[in-house]
Length: 402
Image (cartoon, rainbow, N blue to C red; front, side):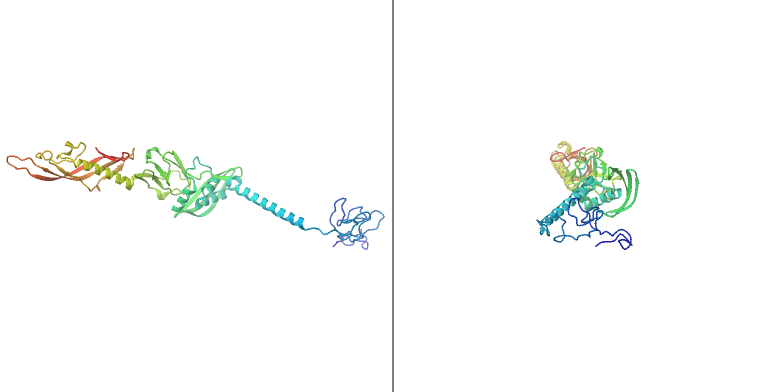
């Protein structure tokens, strides 16, 4: 289909003859489209020559200009063209497209180490990664702390099992050059968090200044073989962990660690102080070890044959005032109820447990016969105040009275 240049075009309108529209040609190639200036066959007529109308594609037999041939020998219509190269071309093109898409996807996902291109996205990614238990994703949008000992999926998932992050919302964002603050609200377990995160931009990536809680382990804590979620941290001066609940313990079976502020766990890395308040207590195993050491001490003291046990059992304290007791006639019965004793773990050395409290002893002895009184058996009670220490580092643990 062809279109005139405009109203009045053509010979009847007095203007130049209308020219049919067709596609451009390549020099030296057969033309089936756009007329070319000076082309007597398919373009503008040469001076003094008549206009020849546009030849339809493909040219009909006998329409090729003199001296030019068609697609085959002697002219004529082109031979049938195989569609196979076209199909191959399409398949190759599709493969190229897939490759390009895959490469683009990989670059997009891996670009910048996963860091976010804006501060909002960085904070949202960080909090969602904590909720999902994917430590590496959280690390990619935060400044790397000096140690990642506790920054792994295993511990993070245990934290989220105790209390999970939900309902994450970005409330406000403020940018100032390469620095930004992002306010976010979320729930951490049954607690409501409203935290402001500080971020800095490096290159095209925004990262949180602090994404892990840093906790200095004071040497004065003296918790034997301290662990965090079962990981030994007793040799660490400072540990880093994702904000949230922590499970403290001891690799020493005699002790357990109690966090008196466990319910007030930090909900963000900005919580610098009071994140944990740890105390050491005897575990069930430790208490049994202490009681076994005391029982062994008492049983040894019960072997005394004197009214004053220290006479033949140094370090034993039970005694009764029996001036007329026949030497070597005493029989002591050791106390078995230890429930009134108090145990206190040593401040400087937890392996040294102080013991204090009263214990009821019973002794039977024979009096010495006199000219006016025959010998007789007597039984008396002695409430001994026991005070001493159990050394849990000994094998077996031992009690020493003070």
